[in-house]
Amino acid sequence: MNSPASFGSDNQAPAHPSVLEALARANSGHTPSYGADPWTERAQELFRQHFGPHTRAFPLFNGTGANVLGLSSILRPHEAVLCARDAHVDVDEGGAPERFGGFKLVALPTQHGKIAPGSIEASLGYVGDPHRVQPRAVTISNATELGTVYGPGEIESLAETAHAHGLLLHMDGARICNAAVSLGLSFAEITTRVGVDVLSFGGTKNGLMGAEAVVFLREGLGEEFLFLRKQGMQLASKQRFLSAQLVALLEGELWRENAAHANSMAQRLAAAVARAPGLEIAEPVQANAVFARLPKATIGELQQRWPFLVWDEQANLVRWMCAWNTRAEDVDAFAADVHAVAGKFAR
Image (cartoon, rainbow, N blue to C red; front, side, top):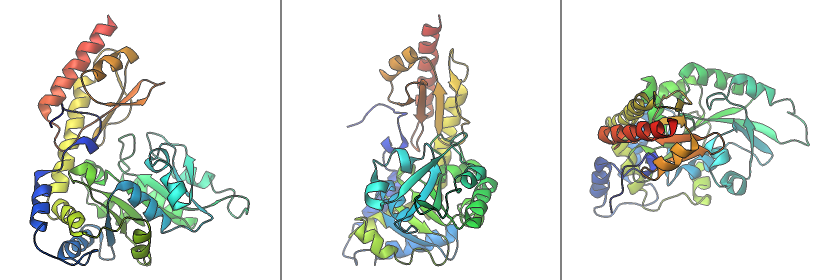
């Protein structure tokens, strides 16, 4: 059943045809289970090519599992994770980090969705106090929850600050493809080479049917993850179907093409609505999201025609997401409706 074009989430987009073709090719004959298959071996090779020779990648089902297990693997029971105040891992994981990871999240102030090295340092005053949870890791999202992108210099500064205080740097890369394309850089240039230790690699938002990976970028990390992934209920018996998707994304330019299209549609949308009456683009448009403020009545009428998310009801802040399959004609039609509805309420 087809649904109208949506700007609600890149999760709402279908799987890319090339991914479905890869799944169909993998769906033949018998092969060893639990990752002892040629597709998983090939996925490992590709992750090493993209991120560096010491990379170890573990395919799993979803981003929540990747974040919770990836962070759990580098923490002890009395340790905590420093994160942005609007980090997905804190706001939108349904309490999974606390329940299944057993670790505390400490929210830091942000600007445009990003944390700064000074915020990390300011949160370390209680280190050594037995009454307080002890920080062990910093997690950042790239692209951030507000659609902004950390550049390599920003990531390197965060990594240097974290490492200087004995902390590890984790990246929630649910939209890492969009971030890399936005910067015109490789995956390694915004992760391994600038000090990221552990990565949650996202593929579902960029054209996969459903596959993510926890990626360890530094030697000595992830030694016990084989056991944690099983215990955390994220080990796929028919792992070839997760790995085949990751291979389809990483073997050629599909990851880049999908993300570049989504990003360009967001730029197109932002430019098209920028002068609508009463509308303000609230965040820099650097990946595949447009955040805008507009009158509540305008939001209500537009949502009767188009699916999208109200990010903050009190601030009248909305989020419009573009995906690998967003069509230019849908962007233009939506922008025309934004102008028409905004103009009506501006009179």
